[in-house]
Length: 326
Image: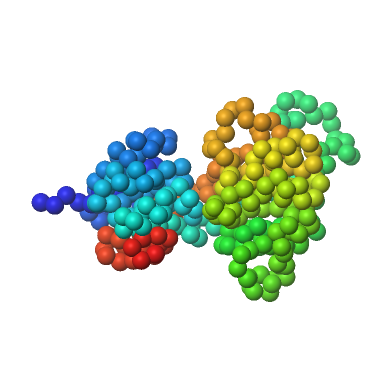
């Protein structure tokens, strides 16, 4: 009797995606501990698996793919980004790599805007002032922040999440500049203005990053480009930590030249407890939780499961980013 195809979930997810796959006849192995598997451990757990359902923290290297063996047919990333997967090695082995575009769009856009609001109005600093007993009363010049209404926001990367973030800014009466590698006529129809990246950085009161991490975008906001940003401007990053030169960002925040930064992603993740970024004035660093709603996290797992199911049924997975013909 042939054993059912085995699927390794590298995390336990909200929702019933794993149970539904079991009901479809798959053998489902869930890594239940809330930790990242080291490369050697992931390679061992992947042996003989038909599918890996992975997260951004899982290093799906050539060694992991080789260890999995010929049974492996799909790496289903439960997220939009897939820079943690060695695409060339997957293609060479005829393994599909899929992602979950759109599943986390609205939650991530909400969170990016929450970071912008929090940093602009100095909410973490204000909360600590009260909590630590340092609030002495109301003062006209106390904790003055950036007024977003009428401000100019620069959106770097106008894909699904970038556009959703821009719509939220539009609702606050902000002027939207955007930088994108591809023309966006629908953006122009909304009154959003395309801009060269350097010009966008020089004109925006706040900049939000929404690009994938690739060889081209690693260090996109380097020391020179951070230096172009307006004095007092705010940077928001819910994309990938590697898009920003983190050392240069620390310098810009420590000097007071930038007004603040809201970062849901860093490099590395997690940051060491005494990393200088955590002590920077105006820095709000959160633990990669932009997609952390029950609805969105359940949807991510469900999309990954559907990609696995499609491969098992001999269909092209709906969200393929690499594979035998991608």
